[in-house]
Amino acid sequence: MVKHLHHASITTTNIERLAAFYIDVIGFTEVLRTEWDGDMPDCDAIFALDKTSVKIAILRLANGFLELFEFRAPIGKAGSPDRPVNDVGYTHICVTVDDIEAEYARLTALGIPFHCSPRHAAGLCKATYLRDPDGNIVELMEPEPGGPFVI
Image (cartoon, rainbow, N blue to C red):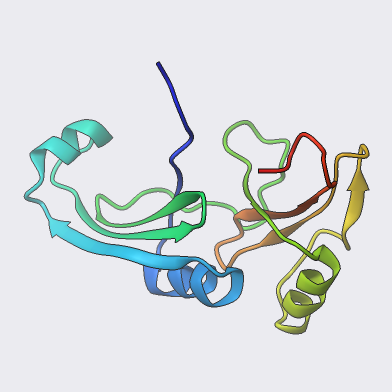
C-alpha cells in the first residue's frame, strides 16, 4: 500500500548553486550529501543508465524531502529555464508559507523571479509561482484556514 509522498527530485548542472537557493532562500535544511563515480551498479540499474557519476544533496522541510542530482556522467539534455507549466511532465514543487505576502516581499527583494504577485486560487489558498536558478517552478502557497490544503 502506498502511504506517503516522500520526496521530489530535481536534476541540475550545478548542485552547489541549487542547494544554496533551496537552503538559503526557501529554508530547507541539508540532511545528506553523497556522490559516486561509476561504481554504483544498483543505482545505475534503478536509473536505467550506465556508469553514472553523480553528486546528490538531500534537503528537508518539516514534512518532506527534496533530492538534488548533478550528473557528471552521463550528461543529460539541458532543460529550458522558461519551460511553461502546460508542458507534459512534472511542473513544480509546492511549499506552504504562513504569510505569503511577506515571503513574496522578501523573495522579490532578493531578485527572485515570480510569474505574478500572490493571488487567491479558487477560495482554497493564496498562491504564486517563482523560478529557481535553473528555471524550475516553486509554488508558494498559503492555505485558507480550515481548508483542504492545511497539513
